[in-house]
Image 1 (spheres, rainbow, N blue to C red):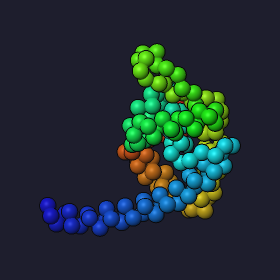
Image 2: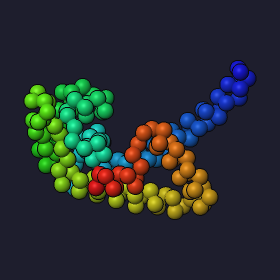
Image 3: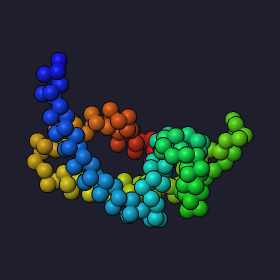
Image 4: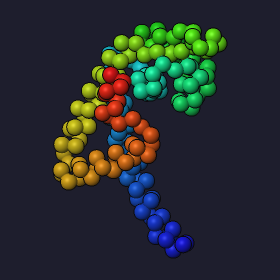
Length: 161
């Protein structure tokens, strides 16, 4: 058993290193695409909008939990997004103590602008790769997205936009 672990460890390190390298490239693409938004939002604010787009209306507490921040930080994120007209907040109909946060049409438009910019830049990178590598990349990244419980692009566009 230890022999198998010793043999597989370098493979796992190599795989992790490859994903770390790719993640740097993807973070760069993500930051540039968010900077292309019609109004200035941070990466965390963008993530909050994505959570609303894919999960529907949510309480500040639920958003805080998903963002792994405390509720007061999530509330401040929502304050800024509300001032920008990207979200609305209303008292929950089911729990008068809770506040539901909703994505506005402007919020959806921002997400679509970012998505189009990101798609274009990723297509340029994929266009510089051999087709066989692109196919393998798609397969590996689809499996990675599934394991990370991320909503796929087809479901994202059907549901969120």
